Length: 225
Image: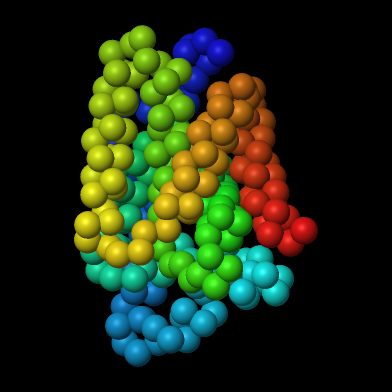
């Protein structure tokens, strides 16, 4: 596909949306609130009910592919993920619309969770928004690849390279990183971005959300069959 096909959906500056509630800020706020709740003595309850516990997923609790985005194992884990979300989220949200952005974030989390379930240990437990964050990396890379012959595209490639380098260092600070969730989220974001680049017209925003929702549903079905 030609690069021109995605130019209209890529913003050129980093700024939160000003025409309504920012989903980026909501996701950051929720992660912060749940982290504080964990510090206040609710960590055990939150883990039992929201973490991706693979035996529970195996028992049919498919929603656990998504709910771990609310939980983080340490302050460093939270700060790394929320920093990346704050850097990438506003541009992507403004470029595609808030509802599609929410769909992208949750679909990437779901695919990352499915990868962790299918490729990880049957008894493994995971928390964190890393799968969703890597979905943002994936769509960002897709945009950069489409525009790689432009000045902006080269800038996007440098930015995503720097961010991926920072996240590659995360295992030095956060033990037991779930690489399966990173891989699944990244693939989901890239694929969704590629499909979105082919959508246009007045119903494009709705179509983007439907694509992301379909990807999330497929991820959940993959752990149920």
